[in-house]
Image (cartoon, rainbow, N blue to C red):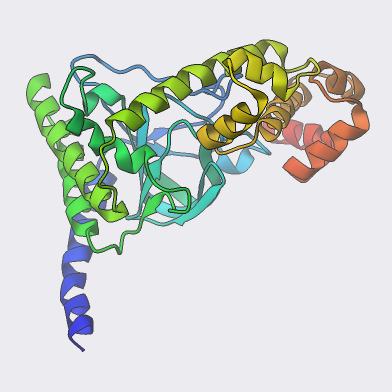
Length: 337
């Protein structure tokens, strides 16, 4: 009885905090976004941050989503990311984890893992919050500051990358997100906006840290992640040049300066995908681009993108996109037309 009463008493606070946040965001300008051509051949999505305010808040809509037949949304980046769905529902994937989201939830992205929208339903908008490490913790600053980043990249593998809008500390997070959005989209000097934005961002991260039960010192873990990131970038750069060749996992391990067994575990831990799956998807991305943008034969596309033959490309393509290469090309041209 007492628990039910407390839940009923907390419900108005929860709804009011969420309503205020969503109402404010509904009044902000919205920008349409498509993941291509923003993502490069390494599946890396680059962003530029102003030194005086290393933070980006974007209210995005995705009008082209339904017309992106098999487009590749999965990507990675060095900076950190939080996503607040404002309108519409869907599924978001981080590594091997898939979370169903709705307005008021908060998606917590492990930035080095391949991640992206897996499904959308209806008209959709999201507030995307992007920031590099230095927005939260300066390289020479106190080690404790790095613990704020633990919710983004220190969660156990079995913990879903989402805070539900109905969670106990959701009202506090919604209030902090509202303060962050007001500081970013409002007026005032850059210094004042920076201070207010950082205060509210740290508040969000503090509550997320408590929500996920992360109490460890995170500075050493962050250093290890930065080392993994450097190795990963070397491998991705090498694959960009050599993906169409008969690439092997031991060759990629040598590029990273690791043994094959250690590299296998490193790649899966860092990206959330196996190296073999990543390489196949990379080749499929290039094959899909050639199908959309050229009249080259499917056999020639298979040879140019690293597939052993046309039939193997056909099997992989149908498994990934749900249709044969020829049908994909035809549907893509109908969509463009």
